[in-house]
Length: 80
View 1 (spheres, helix red, strand yellow):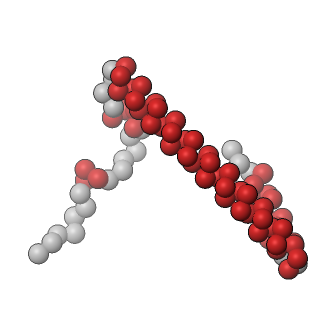
View 2 (view 1 turned 180 degrees about the vertical axis):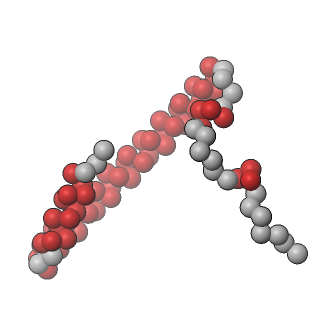
C-alpha cells in the first residue's frame, strides 16, 4: 500500500537557492556558474520562441489574423 504524502525533500520551497548553499567561496562559485548556465539556456529558449512566434505572425498575416498578431507584438514588447 502506498501513501500519498509527498516527499518533502523533493518539494520546492520559497527559500532562495543561495540561502540553502553552504557559504564558502567554492560552493558559491559553483552555484553562480550553474545559475549562469541556466540563465543562458533560458535566454536562448526565449529567443527561439520569439523567432518562432515571428514566423507564425508572418504566416498569420496571410490568414487575416491581425488582432492575434497585434497581441503577439504587445506581449513581446512587455518583456521585463
